[in-house]
Image 1: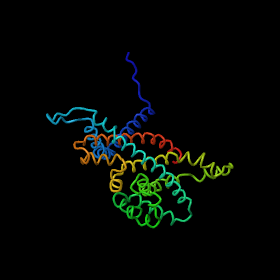
Image 2 (image 1 turned 90 degrees about the vertical axis):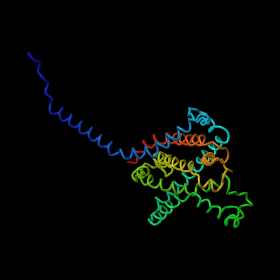
Image 3 (image 1 turned 135 degrees about the vertical axis):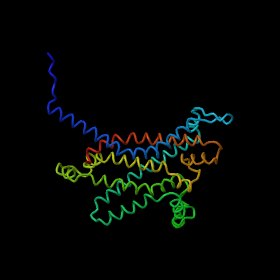
Image 4 (image 1 turned 90 degrees about the horizontal axis):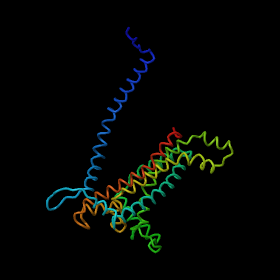
Length: 303
């Protein structure tokens, strides 16, 4: 006698067909994302690979042989290089905190305003100012708040100890484009706060402060942190404004990288510059590692 063969039920056949269709859709989705992955690999993967290779290798001037070494990474974390990294982190963190607070307050005023003209005007100006940087911004502040600037002479700021070419002056200049950037980031997040939440809090007898403390700020916390990360990265990577304004008087890692590449201080420091660039990537990655989990949590509330 032969054993009876099992005949698949119609339900099992339908399940198998659905599984095959899902696999085909997943494969097509990967094909659709392939151009983006290739573009990201060419624009980001290759430069990072070149930085990593240059930071951990050394060429023997006598034989031309290439060998692995940790000397460049070690030097990038010592002496004036370490001072420049600390200075960039301090400047970026300070301007990001101030820019986050000021930008959120301005965005809240825009969202709660009744006139559409104010909202459109502030958002348009923020879009322009957020992209106004570099050497033109530095020269604009020199003409305004420099030693012979119009505002400095009119208000006699030099007698009060004001110095544009310092850490404080650079902080003020960075806020000029960081605050508008935070406004652009904060307005959509504030628009995502549902009016029903405020109405429910008011019906429960909560004050405005209690609403923001227990509902508004917890929901907006990931967006606030995301804006902080964006502002921190923008300030951390800025170069042209600081180079045109303070030169080497304020230690910043981007200025040290430029000096090492051009040989202004010591010749043959190109690999140290690559190691400093790799240090910047690591710091940015650590900041992003804190932000991403909170961003995933906020998605459940705002959508």
